[in-house]
Image (tube, rainbow, N blue to C red; front, side, top):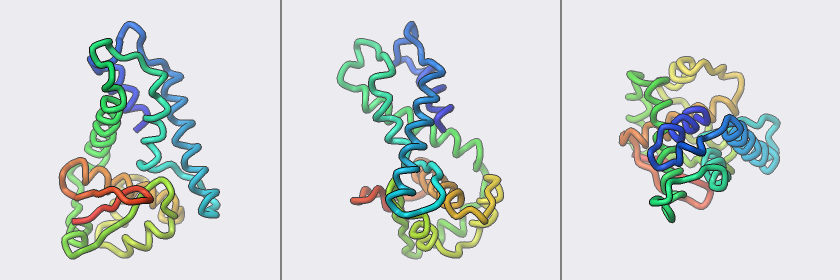
Amino acid sequence: MIAEFTHQLRRSPHINQRSGVSVRFSIGGLETVTASAVRRAVRNSETEAVPRVSDLPAAVRSSMGRVEFESFEEGREAEILEQLARKAIVDVFRRRLGGFDFSGLLTRFDEGLTVDAGDLVRTEDLLKEIGDVKGVPALLKRLGVSQESPAIAASSLEFALEGLHLSKRLNKSPTATGSRYGG
């Protein structure tokens, strides 16, 4: 997603193309989401730190001084970066999970399932909320995820939830710890 976000910035008419977006931008974004994942792991006493979609806003915030915007965009910088980050997420979601059958997961949300996700939500809590849902093992397999890594499974599931939200197939509302996904 960081690579796609960088590509979105490079193609955006809102970004000063004469200044460009350096390779260092991608590296800085990766370092930032990794630091957010480590923060979550340390705070929650987890042994594995794996970046999630909910870590991406930290990279967006940290990129404010590293990108030059066109002068007519003054005051809209944060909004533009957030919009491009959402576009990056949904584009990666469509490439990786386009055509995937989410009916088992979406049915559970229609039945009242809610899932809290965010940069401080424990891996165990996220996985416990989702529980055994038809199609989740196939989703993880499609993403190339081994279920032996709970942190990677949680990251993959959060990515799918955000992709479903950005594709207007799942609702999302803000919470104190991040977001709540629901039907």
